[in-house]
Length: 186
Image (cartoon, rainbow, N blue to C red; front, side, top):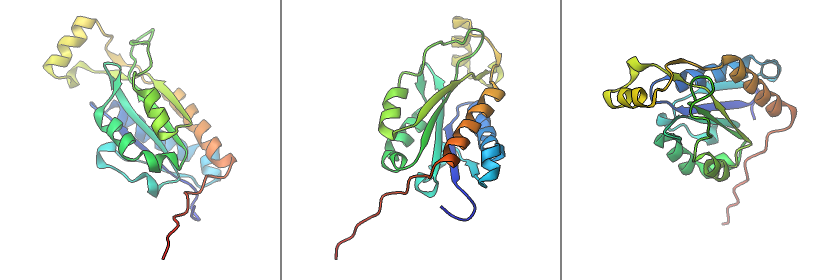
C-alpha cells in the first residue's frame, strides 16, 4: 500500500449503461464514505471491457448487469481470466438487474455462486436496475413487452451508498492482505 491509502477498482460489464453509472457512483461513494475519507481511500470505475489489471489495486468490486438470470459474458470472462489475482485481494461482487415492485426477476443470477467461488469474494449484492425501452433493440423490446416487464429506473442509490460504506469500513478496519511473495531460485 502507498502513502495515498488503499486503491479500489470498481469494474463492471454494462449493456445499456445503467450498471456503468452504478459503478461510477460506487467509486465515489467508497471515497466519500467516512472511512474512505479518513484513510484516503481512492476508488476508480473502469469498464471490465478495458481489462483493468486487478494486481494494480488493493481491492476490487466486480459487477455485471444481469440478463436472463446471468452475468454478461465480459464480466464472467474477466472473473475467470483474473481469478488468481482476484483471490489475493478483497473482492465483492455486484449484480444489477431486478426491476419493479416486487423485484423481477426475484432470483439471484445463476452464475454468481461459481464466480464467488473462483474469485474468493467476500460477498455479493444484487441491486435493482433500470429498464428503458428507448435503449433496447427490436428483439429486446419484443421480449420486454411479451414478459410485461416493468419499465423505469429502479436503482436504489441509498442502498448502493450504504454497501459502499460497509466495504470502506471493512477495508479500513483491518489490514489489507499482502499479495504473496514471488520466490525465485537462481
